[in-house]
Image 1 (tube, rainbow, N blue to C red):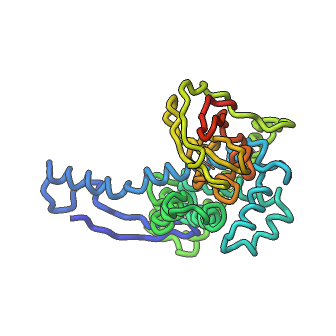
Image 2: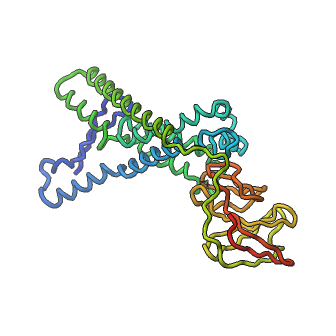
Image 3: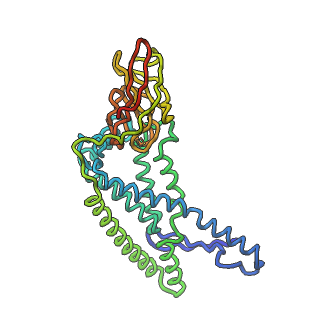
Length: 354
Ligand code: FES
């Protein structure tokens, strides 16, 4: 049977040390196969959160460096993919925390950097297992704020990834990062110190100081990496937003009744070449156009046009339903546009134009 005992080390992220019996069979337990099986099960339970920890840590580091190397992220309000434009869109988009966004709109650059470097600190903290519970709480706070802002209008709710991230952080907030981690090392050493009869006060102070030194070293490394990425890894902003790479033209045409595309509404057809859904729209009376439904940010399907916009539920990009242009990022490229011709009461979907 597994015997569990815990000793909590000092320091904000220090975690419980669990003697789960994987070091060897418990006294009196039968040796051999059943003992090994028990050990494997215990090791599996002990490391169950490791894949989640790796995923979240790598993802948050990647997201941070992606932001810092993106020329649009720190650009001004005229760039629809900039932090300030996205925040403005959130403010006017019915977020329950819209009234709290004033400081971020007044000081967009410090806030944008705070988010990017916060993600980097969270990612590194969780990967190294340094003050892991605190890092996970920071990750949960970031995910919560993104859910209440960027992902708030995603419908149905389960398509919004920030809610999933928020829930994914929860086990790490509860369990910390006691294994294969700096926290684990500090907790084991604190246990040894207690065994040597050192005072609890001394043990706590030592764990806190060493954790602090490791956190400062990690913060310095993160700051250096982030700054180098922002300085040398950032693509230069171009005067004109980049156009999407021209996809292969659709070979076949599709014909529909013009009456199926109402004014201000849309009809959905399929591009026979790619199989992608295409929205045929009529933004003004007698003016027809068609756009791919594939979001140019990360490939999610945008919603059907509503109020003159096409909305992407994944990260909140908005596109103009008359031109396909980006109204709000994070997408930076317009939706691919198809040629549409009208003959009598028929509409013909031609090949991609852009
Ligand atoms: Fe990210 Fe559309 S896939 S906004």
